[in-house]
Amino acid sequence: CKYMDKGLTAAEHIKGGRKVVESGISLCEYVVLGLGGKKMWREHATHTAKVLNEIAPDFIRVRTLAINNMMPLYNEIENGNFVRLTDEEILEEERLLIEHLECRSNYVSDHITNLLQEIEGKLPQDKEKMLASIDRFQSLPPEERANFRVGRRVGIYSRLDDLYDLHKHQAVEQAIQKLGQGSNQVSEETIYALTGRFI
Image (tube, rainbow, N blue to C red; front, side):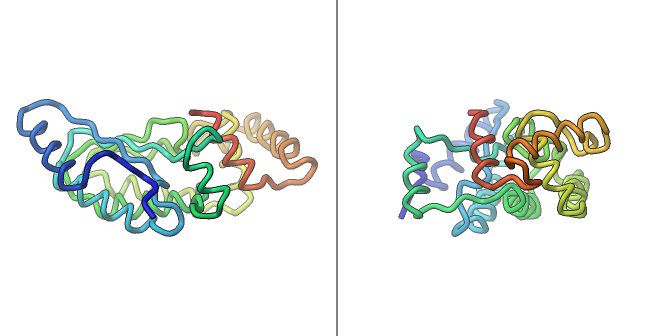
């Protein structure tokens, strides 16, 4: 079943994008991480990379899928037809995307919905640095990864280095207790709802 109607095929997107690049106009392509859901995340990452490699836009800007109950996709989630990725699963998709990018572009992760805004740089030379940011997050203990996720979604943290700000860390711990209703865990549904506030 097709949930995402982008209005044109990959081939049409490539053709149009190339025309813009060849004309000398600076082109920015947007990627929505998580758009493939749990079923299609690998295909979404690799096929998106293939299209971007063909176009070689000046800028690639990534956004993380955020959904509210006013969107048609919300009904598919409620019906169980579309299963969202967690923040950590979206990072795996982003890793796969970056690994498959071979074009010369500026990769920008400057949107508030993105978990790690520090994943940015010039491709291909900064690819390892960008992947290292994902490695850094994934190497954290589970409780620190959870703390950072909540901290990002409530607007306390901006970057991974903020984890080491004691005042901010304590503020996030308090938010976790409140959101978890006394427990030290926050549900994925709550995380999704917090992310959805940003759209």
